[in-house]
Image (cartoon, rainbow over all chains, first blue to last red; front, side, top):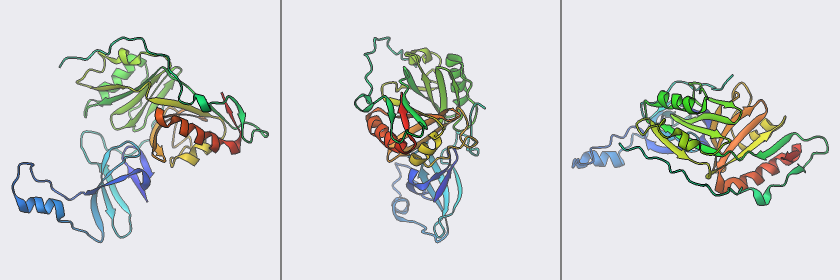
Length: 97
Length: 205
C-alpha cells in the first residue's frame, strides 16, 4: 500500500502511523455533554468503503495527514496536510538543477 | 520576546562514533573494481531550522542571507555549494550544513523567534557519504525511495528511515548521497552500509 505524502511523494505504508478515524469531532475540553464525549470516544462509522482517516508520516517528514482510504480495496483516494498553513501542493522533485 | 543568544564557547574535540569500525581501504568484492566509496564527512555544523506556519519564505531568505544558498521553493528542495548545503526535509523545516563550526551563532539575530527555531544538531548527527557508480543501487537496498536522478535531483533532500533509524538523505552529486543519521545509531548503520556494499566492492576513505 502506497500513501502519497503531500510533501514526500509516494511512500510505503510502513513509514506511516495510523492516528485514527478522521470523522471524530472532539468536544470542547470543558464540555460536560456526555453524549458528545461518548460519541467522540466510541462511535465509529466503520464503513465498507471510503473512510476519512488521520495518518502521520512518522518515518518521513512527520506531518499529520488527512487521508481518504477505501476500507475494502485499500485504495488511497486523497491525501492532504491535516493542518492548514503549509502548502499542500503536489510533490515536486526539488533540486538545484 | 527576549532573543536568546547562543553562548560562544570552546567546543570539545569531536570523536566519531564510527571510529572503532572505520577501516580505510578496499573491502568486499573489489577485485573487479571499486563501485562505491564510503566516508564520513564530519561537517562542523549541522542545523535544523524550522519556520512557524506562514514564515517559511522569511526563513528561507534568512538561510540565503547567512549561507548564500538559495533554496528552491519545492518540497524536499535543496542546494549544495562547496562547503555548505541545505535542503527541506519536512514542511517548513530545513537542514543546513557547513564544513565550518559556528553556523548556529551566525543564524542568531537572522532567524528571530518570530520566524522560527534553530536547533544545533552538530553533535547529534553523523554524516555519511556514499559515492560511486553503484551508490544508487546500494541506497535502494536500504530505503524505499526512488533514487534515480530525475526523481531525486541534485541538491534535493528526502526524509525516510531504515529499520527505525531515521535518515535524511541529500543528493550531493550525480552519483553521490550524504546521509544524516542519529549519532547513537551511526555505528550500526555504518556497519550495515558496509555489508550492503560488499557485493559491489567498496573503499573507505
